[in-house]
Image (cartoon, rainbow, N blue to C red; front, top):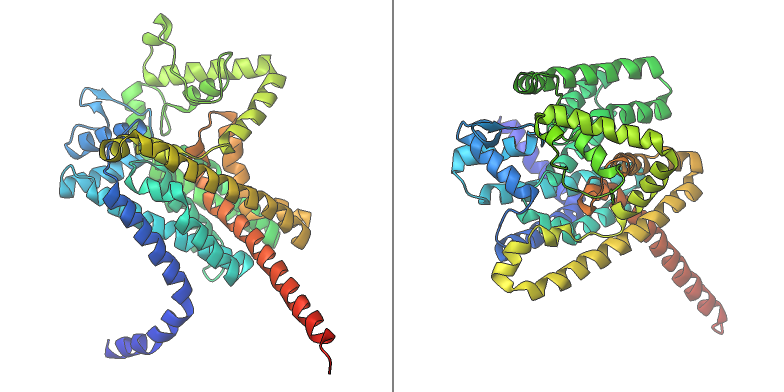
Length: 433
């Protein structure tokens, strides 16, 4: 034990020296989020209110629902379950959730920098971390009860583990299966991520059979870990429900004659009123699919529009903190905060789009199309463009967007540095001997 302590003491200065810039970025991110958490009270709104209510009921032993007699599976249980653990230990207070959000933010930034360093190098990793540290909506979500930070962190851990070639494929598959099961409990969007991992490894190794076996392990573990909740849901509704009962509803919201691509209220017809949530979800999904088949061209146009809507603004962090902000500072603070969030988002989004082009020019278009930053961003974009969109639904892609934006910034800094060097060289040549 003493030898281990001595070894750690000897290596600590080197570790701190090598990681000092990264630690500074993490510290900046932490301080900004602590300032926000102190300045803005937590007042749950919209989905946050649902997560809060469900978590309280789980903690009190009433089950997952609005009340003990109104159990549900409409939302995935993962986020509320995590919050319920805090409520069981600390009572109904939001401080542990805020601290949890702080830790999730640091995890997201740290893993994003790690991935950026693997894929592009030290400088792009640092710029990625800095962009995420200063990102307004990510700071604002410190005081929001939501699934976005938790889901993003879990997905990033999956990507980090999968690309860690120092560990053997089978141990990685086991760990990925466990983490992806947890992510699926938070958002079922994670269910198809193993297919992305299959694609990444096939591109890099061309070992299709070995990779298929590893992905099979991932899927089997996910199925085993999700099965208890599926059994609960099936017993509750009398028919099989994997995780939640909002998939068909979301598909209908994004694909019906009155759809604008965003959340809309489910109609209150007599037919739907007689159905339970699982039956309603299945029915609405079937209606949406029939509408898509009836008008396929409109579906394509609508999907492309939703792709734009998904990325045209980012003010949800202010909106979901609205009650706390207005209560403490008045409504006049909302517009400036939204403007800051929107400007930052559009700037980074523009840099990221340029980054995709640079990636293609520097490494070839095949590499660009298959690169994890592009594939992960494209996956989440495609899924939500088919169903419904809102600005928070591009949050899961933000780490990849930040990495691509950092690629553009680094390229620009290199260009400026080359220009300065050339200018100094020309000036020195003109000086008389």
